[in-house]
Length: 288
Image (cartoon, rainbow, N blue to C red; front, side, top):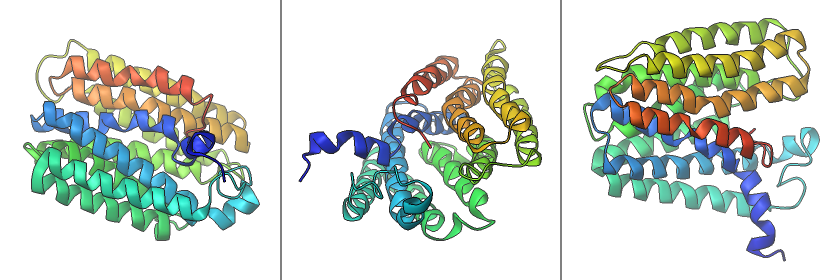
């Protein structure tokens, strides 16, 4: 039986480890909007990472038979991780995420985290391969932003939650064509969504930002938009996968813009700095 050290790379691939760099920014953007950015935000961001990784493991467990046909190199069909191990990882990380959320943010954070676990389960086990799949994933990321806002004036975080959800909808819609390739209409439509998302994030909600939200949102739009433009020019499956990876690794720029627009410029820059790191790590372990 392979040791944990031997299985480490396979487990990192199972949970899409580098993609977790796109997760803490949800909590930061939500907390900044809710006026609750502080020590507890780190705990809520940690809970978000646990739940994200749990969702990725559950996703591969649910897709194990389909992946055996379409992606036999994935950890479960290749035999590098057993289906039981994947399910155990998903359950363990879900439990850890709920505990960390409760300890960090109390009952309200636990309630939001529990809702997020339910939304992740609904997506992985029911919605993913239906027309409601992109909307289901968008709800998950929107709730993740609200988890960061749960210790403050949470209603103020609805705007960043909707912005992140719209981005997620576009990325998920593209991801459904990672194996088959896409027609040109789909990436053209998601590019339009990206432009609207960038415009919304670039407008500061409060406080002075000295143009930082616009700078970060422009960086996001250029990075993700260029990848989608490549799909419009060549809608092959490889280009679609590259665009999905770009959407995942560009998300911290968007989250940083949202945080900076809510009078948290230092936090915004720190979040956005995860984007180039995630892009480099994605060359080692695929985020899709």
